Length: 487
Ligand code: SF4
Image (tube, rainbow, N blue to C red; front, top):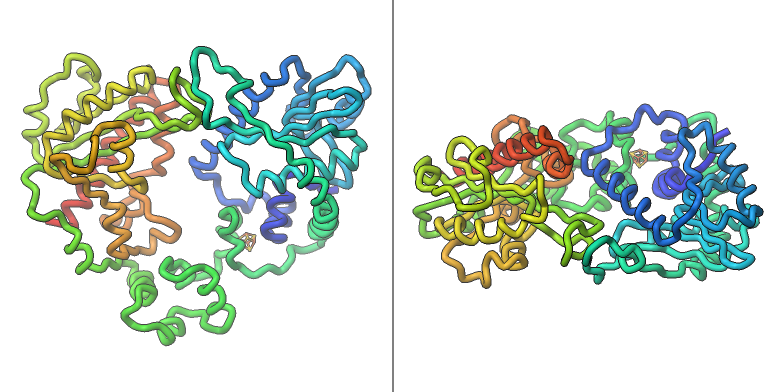
């Protein structure tokens, strides 16, 4: 028998086929990206900390899926054991649907259910999760005094050891989950029927493949779609693309017939067909720094926003600079670089003309980056970077600049390329430095940027060294891109 869980239920709401595949053919799933893995780890860390708000509980987490039936039974026994007042990851099953609840607390002759979220605000998805959990708890006959969502308090400022009572906020979702119970019950029945099918349900690819989450069966479902199909363009929204596709405009040739040949969509299709990039050079050159700067440096900042504040004086998800690489365009930039009295060690001074600073081994030092950046950036007329964030805003936030009228200009290749409608088949669902490298240089030495962050927070020397090297490698791609496009 196949049991629904919270994650498979949510998957089924997005796409019945995704649910079926997850249950019957999980080996066809795409690999998890590093970013997804990091997000999962963050959720786990916050969940464990949240247990301390209701201390002294029994951890019911099973060691393996085979233990679920035993844990369901133990959870039910604990409900009637007056010595048990708090359970973590209590396991319940009702109508072939299994849930684990983060925290369950005895509240007089009832129980308070708490689900923990590692974010600063609550979204519809969290309420939908809670509705499923309530459906199962109610079905199991657990009398609830309240169902609360617990999440991070953005106003909490760390001062000494973490005060878990201040770190978290709680909001009742009881009214919502009670109201949604019938809706959940209908969906559970529908999804159970899907899982019981002898074959995968027939579901066409569509907007649900990307919304609300990128589906991890795209490698399987999209395998018959040609790699250069217009479905991989970004100029038109997904809904319009799929509408054309299912209305018979299902090849690039047919799509080109109905498009203005000078439209962005048509240019993207041509780029797909020729496996090359498209760029609106007129716009690109109009954005080029004028007059030509005498000195240029390339900046790669590594920022971290820990969900749980690490340092006194900081809040959940408050940004800190973990490292930066600053590479002058000319060799002599390194030669004139005096060794700072404090800060980076000699072995942190990277080879060639790239200056690297980091505080991987002691995050308390992170504000040293501010002074170093104030001084070093001012040596150049132009600072080139590649980041989806607005670098000026980041520098203002950390008071590295006081206003936009500093001596140097910031040139963010990410923003410039977006404005110039840059497109390449590798870009598909978003512009990253890794994909840009593939597009321009036909190479893919880079990796997901999140890997650097994972290495930098890995707490091991090999990870730190790798993170430094990767920062430099990334910065070289930024430098090569700038030189390639503007020289
Ligand atoms: S790729 Fe699309 S159609 Fe296939 S399972 Fe995922 S959401 Fe459904």
